[in-house]
Length: 159
Ligand code: TYD
Image 1 (tube, rainbow, N blue to C red):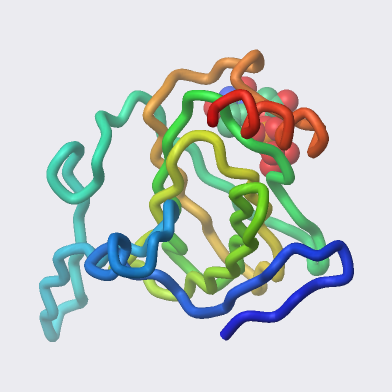
Image 2 (image 1 turned 60 degrees about the horizontal axis):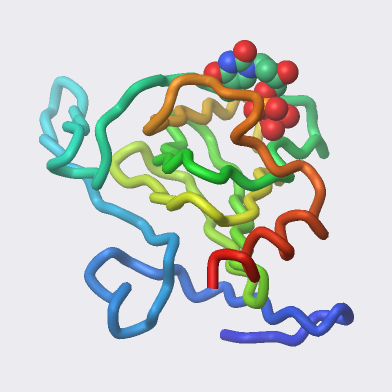
């Protein structure tokens, strides 16, 4: 589903899966992880360069998010990431400069892969949600683009 926002950007709520990414042409996409269902409790896991297309240099998590708060709201020049809702739910809005896409994460057996050069914001966190982020880089403050106009300029330099 595609809608046109007031600022002329399109937002789509059709969630792109890894399998469809070439057909649909999306840069950020959902990746299903292995899931071992067990009466004792389910188990999932992720291996670098196998389930996700990068080597994991850092892991961080976001928790105790008060109602109505947003996190993110920036892009990375180099960092690729994979975001999993380990508990609860939240939305991630990704923006490649022309199209915005909303992904709702609410299960711990899949996650959202976001390559470098994508503006992303996390919002609509449920109570007690826990967001796990696997990152392809060490923390580097210089990798962040915090200004949306700078992001658009960065995108046009990439082309
Ligand atoms: P930041 O990524 O800016 O979070 P958000 O985009 O949700 O606001 O991180 C918030 C602060 O945490 C930032 O000032 C730096 C620090 N930080 C680290 O020191 N190491 C990390 O790996 C991360 C992700 C953040």
